[in-house]
Length: 347
Image (cartoon, rainbow, N blue to C red):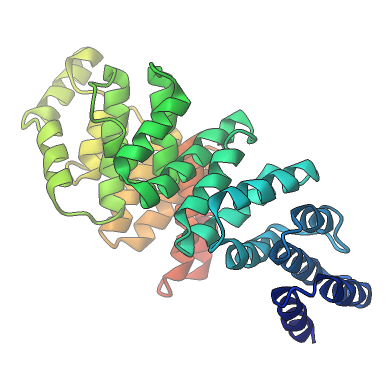
């Protein structure tokens, strides 16, 4: 019945019979005060170019709208706006924000647009929301906008836009946040495309090498990027230098923690090589996550689950590797050969 109402009201909207569609919608909403009905009302109002009306029903729904509901609304939104001019998306977003809907909820409307190939429309959505999100989440949304613009207009235009948002001289801290967000959003190409024109600050260069190594390994990439990174990190005496430096207490005499961890991720050495240092600072989250990345790439699923569990034991949601370990552990559920208890333990 709900589907029949949706079809009927959408057809009426297509025929330009807005008043008939609206009357049918309101009657349907009164009889079925559900989240799905509110989504249908919003969809039909969007089709009728009534952005304010669509925003109003979503801001005052007959039932609380969950994240899953907004994902469904996103599918409806994409069906309406993927063929519309991109500025129409911005106006619809502004109406939703003005109605008091939280930016985090509106963000769920973006992926269906991108999936539908509506890159310009997705860019408008993400670019606007990047200005409305809390500071700790804005970098991630900026990268979503970058990805949409890159899909629509190419890497050069996307990089130029992103650099403009960041200002003429972004700090090493800003670069670190950008690279971390790019990895977290799985926008792996950004780890190369955004940091190729200027030599990075040394500490950030090491962090970037680690993220690039993890990106290559988790995607199983074999090619020029992997070869170039291996060459950049290569040092046949690395393990000997590290052992000697540790024995005499001269930490600066060998490669940084990040560089050594990057080498490990790419296949060099063992977990035991890090045992003496893995408990310092943020490392209880970092080391086991990257151990898990390598284990997963080598199809050692049980080992990967165990390492992700260790990473989660740091219980620090401010640490990006903690978040990534949780996500990675969750994906292991898709492996039917993994015992349920082990997956739960990794959470």
